Length: 234
Image: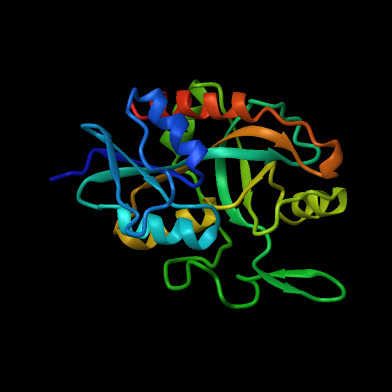
C-alpha cells in the first residue's frame, strides 16, 4: 500500500507545543521522549519531538519514521535569518537545500567541508553532497502558503557574532540557520528507497550576528510555525 501520511519533526518542546495547539490537540510531555515516539495529530499526520541538535534529530527521525505510513517528512520550527538574506521576523523559509554548515576541517587558510574531505553524509547514495534538496512539490506548497525558498544551513553553533554569521553565509549561501535540518534530511534519505519527500520549513524568530543587537519575536514565530504545520499537512 502506498504511504500517504506526514511526519512532522520538531526539535524544541516550544515548537511542538505550537503545532499541538494548531491541531487542537492537548499538550503532551514535549520533553524529548527516550523512545522518540510518533504522536498522532490526525488520521494522516504524526508528530515527533526530537530534542535540539543534529544527533537528536537524526535519532528521532530514525525511530519515528515509518516508510509504510509516511510519504512526507517535514522538519518544522524556527530559525535565525543570516546576513544579506533580506528576511524579516516571522517570514517563512522553505529549504531548497538543507545543508551542513560546519562539518569538515578548518585549515589556517580555509574551511573544507566534509564531502570534500571524502566523507560525504550521503556516501554510497549518489553524488557526494553536504546537503539534501527539499522536495519540489512540498516547496511549491510552502511557497503558496507564503514561504520563500532558499538554502538553510544546519549549524552546531548558532551565529551570535557578526563574523560567524558572515562566515556561515559565505560558506553555504544559506539565508537562514537552524540546528537539525540536514541531519533529519540525510536520515530520511537512508530510510526508504525511494526516499520519502522531505522539506525543512522554518519561521524566522530572530536575526543572527551580535547577540546584544539581535531582534527577536519568538512568540510570533512559534504561532506561525503552528499555523504552517497545520496548513501544509492538509
